[in-house]
Length: 216
Image (cartoon, rainbow, N blue to C red; front, side):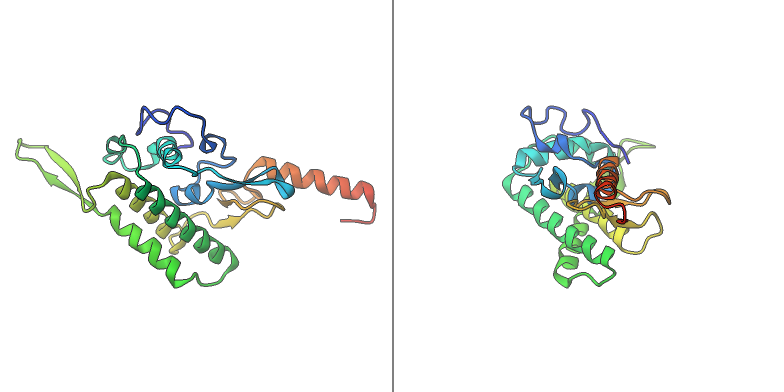
């Protein structure tokens, strides 16, 4: 997965600063990256940040992650997201977060969240058709003509693959106090979502040991 898609997709993108650019963890699957647009800034006593506060933030997020959408969809994501698009992405984010929480806790997800993810995943349906221009000509057709909704479908489809039992790196909730992010365990020694969380936990342990030599 690309960590930064540069200027692909919404090439002109919103010019104002966005919390999307300050997300502490990027480069996971599209589904987890959407979930992780809510995070705690500052650790245990930090502030909850919602990087998707406006439709313009959604535009920025789509721009930053454009390289992870299908090649046929990227050029179609240049139009600004509407309030309706924004609300659909927030609905999917909430459902994916609940599914991730159930997955990492080893319990079944709520049926309502599963329905939300599955309904969105259907929007990703696409196929290739020949063009009447001679050999080698083809075009990708989408069951959903709205490109933002097709993008929503691709995010949901990533969630289906991630939580539907497809082999790969398991999903973990970061165990650092005050962290609400999810990550794939890409290697056996990975314990935290980011090095920042790992360092914060190690510093806290070191401080406790100095205060109480019998601790930990």
